Each structure stands twice: as structure tokens, then as C-alpha cells.
Length: 270
Picture 1 (cartoon, rainbow, N blue to C red):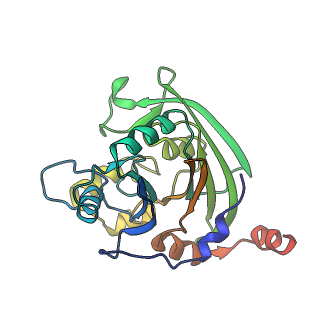
Picture 2 (cartoon, helix red, strand yellow):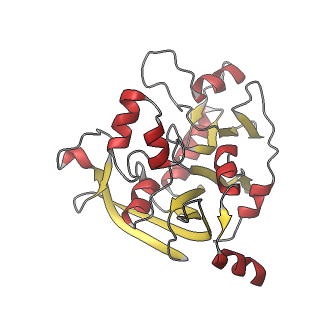
């Protein structure tokens, strides 16, 4: 993977209308926006909660906006949106053919191998065994093939001396929660992950009582530290490459960590 992590130093991104949704690149056929963490893509219940789709409809009234790549509520980063029916059809077919490349940055627990590929089968856990969380996915022999490739960019230490790594991830398939399940499967869950982190009951506790001091100790971050950082595709024979630095909450946490001796040596040699 070519390294685009230095883009994280460029923290200025244009904001439009609402300070938390960011207009990254605009085209007559599509638009790329930066979704903040804890913003739903689509409404899930009639409770009036603000969504990215509502923001898009307000900005592009009368246009048949269609969201091409969806992100979990807590995941921040780049979202590609079609502005015409023709573009929605074309981009949808490109997605099926895997012609839209997506890369993510994540903060994970521990220090993974420098690089690796994770190949398993995934499906919803509750289809095969009891699960307290309806949407929880799991590695299952009966599941669907899933492939994730990652590179460990750097490892630092928190105040207790525990390792935290910045990893760059690229998907070859797009299963639900794939990155989070796969990184947890290899023993390096995404920091702050309430479902696939140290204890899935953290998710149930959060649903019942909100954020607590115990959850802070267990998870360290209020949301899972996953960020959609790069989108790449070809449109009308022209390459489109879009980068978005780490969202501020992830960047602040990362900047607050201490360099490990190995990390300092690696930086000196580079």
C-alpha cells in the first residue's frame, strides 16, 4: 500500500452549512463528503434524529441523492454520494466490480505484525448461535468470504505502557463490520469498539446507561477509532483520488500517546 498517512498533518478541511459535515469534493454527477463520528447515514427510526441523508437533501434540494458507500454511525470519514440516477447506477455497478477503492485508518490495541491479510468467512452471529446483540458479526465457517489487508504504520504507548497502533486497512470485500471483526479476530481490536473490543457487554451497558467512567477505563475512546481516509476511482476516464485526515478526536488521542523506543528508532532511520 502506498502511504498516505502524512496527509493527517493537514488538519484544515472546508466546512459547509453545519460544522460537523464537510464538503470535500463536488462534481455535477457526485459529491464526496466527510461524515463526522456518531452521525447516522440513513434514518433508522422515526425519532427525528439528524442524518447525513437529511444534510444532503438540504444541500441538494430536488436531486435524487444516493449514498454509495455507507459507514457505521461511529465511523468517520469519506462518503461518496451520487447526485443523479445515472451516476447512482454507474457507481453502484463500479462498487460491485470493486472499482471503487476504499482505505481506512484505525487505532488498534497492541502491535500487529507489520502487514498482513485476513481471510475468513463472516456472517451475523445470531443466525447460528445465541447472541445478545442482533447485528453482531462473527467469523463462521458457514459465512460469506471476507478479505482484509492491513499495514501497521506505527505503534505508540498509552500512559499505562500499553501499545496502540495506527493501521492502514484496505478491503477486498465489503461485509458488515468487516474491519472491526477481522482486527478483533487477529487479537488487535479497534480502540473504543463496544461490540468487538474487550467485552461485548460494554455495548449493552452503553445502550442502557450511556457513557460512564467504567466504559472510559475499558474503551479509552467514546467511539470506535475507525476512519474512512481515502477514496479512489475513475470517472469519465479521469482518476479521482480523495484523502481526508484523521478526524480530530482520533488525532488528538494519537497525538497524546508517547512514542515507543521502537517507534523512535524507526523514525530516525526513515
